[in-house]
Image (cartoon, rainbow, N blue to C red; front, side, top):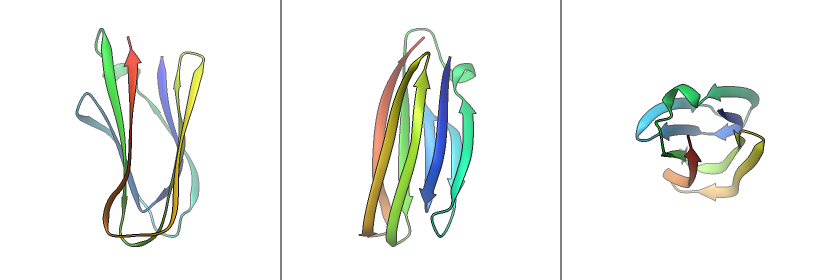
Length: 97
Protein backbone atom coordinates (compact mmCIF):
# COMPACT_ATOMS: atom_id res chain seq x y z
CA UNK A 1 0.00 0.00 0.00
CA UNK A 2 1.26 3.48 -0.88
CA UNK A 3 -0.31 6.86 -0.12
CA UNK A 4 0.58 10.45 -1.02
CA UNK A 5 -0.36 13.16 1.49
CA UNK A 6 -0.07 16.82 0.45
CA UNK A 7 -0.46 19.61 3.03
CA UNK A 8 0.90 22.72 1.25
CA UNK A 9 1.27 23.85 -2.35
CA UNK A 10 2.04 27.38 -3.50
CA UNK A 11 1.29 27.49 -6.40
CA UNK A 12 0.89 24.10 -8.11
CA UNK A 13 1.95 20.58 -7.25
CA UNK A 14 1.44 17.47 -9.31
CA UNK A 15 2.48 13.85 -8.96
CA UNK A 16 3.01 11.08 -11.48
CA UNK A 17 3.38 7.33 -11.04
CA UNK A 18 5.34 5.78 -13.89
CA UNK A 19 4.53 8.86 -16.00
CA UNK A 20 0.76 8.90 -15.32
CA UNK A 21 -0.57 12.03 -13.57
CA UNK A 22 -2.27 10.87 -10.36
CA UNK A 23 -2.58 14.23 -8.56
CA UNK A 24 -2.67 17.92 -9.55
CA UNK A 25 -3.59 20.88 -7.37
CA UNK A 26 -3.32 24.61 -8.04
CA UNK A 27 -3.51 27.14 -5.20
CA UNK A 28 -2.64 30.70 -4.26
CA UNK A 29 -1.62 32.17 -0.93
CA UNK A 30 -0.08 28.97 0.51
CA UNK A 31 -3.19 27.42 2.11
CA UNK A 32 -2.96 24.37 4.35
CA UNK A 33 -5.02 21.34 3.33
CA UNK A 34 -5.14 17.56 3.81
CA UNK A 35 -5.16 15.92 0.38
CA UNK A 36 -4.68 12.17 0.29
CA UNK A 37 -4.15 9.96 -2.78
CA UNK A 38 -4.07 6.16 -2.70
CA UNK A 39 -1.25 5.29 -5.11
CA UNK A 40 -1.72 1.52 -4.89
CA UNK A 41 -4.04 1.18 -7.94
CA UNK A 42 -1.38 2.85 -10.12
CA UNK A 43 1.51 0.59 -9.09
CA UNK A 44 2.82 -2.10 -11.44
CA UNK A 45 4.67 -5.23 -10.36
CA UNK A 46 8.31 -4.46 -9.62
CA UNK A 47 9.72 -0.97 -9.03
CA UNK A 48 7.60 2.14 -9.61
CA UNK A 49 8.62 5.79 -9.82
CA UNK A 50 6.62 8.48 -8.04
CA UNK A 51 7.63 11.97 -9.18
CA UNK A 52 6.45 15.03 -7.27
CA UNK A 53 6.80 18.37 -9.06
CA UNK A 54 6.23 21.86 -7.64
CA UNK A 55 5.50 24.79 -9.95
CA UNK A 56 5.61 28.40 -8.80
CA UNK A 57 4.09 31.39 -10.56
CA UNK A 58 6.54 33.86 -8.99
CA UNK A 59 7.08 35.06 -5.44
CA UNK A 60 7.25 32.69 -2.45
CA UNK A 61 6.92 28.93 -2.89
CA UNK A 62 6.04 26.12 -0.47
CA UNK A 63 5.46 22.42 -1.12
CA UNK A 64 4.99 19.96 1.76
CA UNK A 65 3.66 16.47 2.29
CA UNK A 66 4.50 12.85 2.98
CA UNK A 67 4.75 9.64 1.00
CA UNK A 68 3.82 6.52 2.98
CA UNK A 69 4.76 3.08 1.68
CA UNK A 70 3.65 0.34 4.05
CA UNK A 71 4.81 1.59 7.45
CA UNK A 72 7.59 3.82 6.08
CA UNK A 73 6.92 7.58 5.98
CA UNK A 74 9.08 9.84 3.79
CA UNK A 75 8.33 13.56 4.10
CA UNK A 76 9.04 16.07 1.35
CA UNK A 77 9.38 19.81 1.82
CA UNK A 78 10.51 22.86 -0.13
CA UNK A 79 10.19 26.50 0.88
CA UNK A 80 11.70 29.58 -0.77
CA UNK A 81 11.04 33.29 -0.16
CA UNK A 82 11.03 33.99 -3.90
CA UNK A 83 11.46 31.99 -7.10
CA UNK A 84 11.12 32.56 -10.84
CA UNK A 85 8.09 31.21 -12.68
CA UNK A 86 8.22 27.51 -13.52
CA UNK A 87 9.31 24.24 -11.94
CA UNK A 88 11.14 24.98 -8.70
CA UNK A 89 10.90 21.63 -6.88
CA UNK A 90 11.00 17.99 -7.88
CA UNK A 91 11.59 14.81 -5.94
CA UNK A 92 11.45 11.17 -6.99
CA UNK A 93 10.52 8.17 -4.86
CA UNK A 94 10.96 4.51 -5.82
CA UNK A 95 8.05 2.36 -4.67
CA UNK A 96 8.35 -1.44 -4.81
CA UNK A 97 5.25 -3.49 -5.49
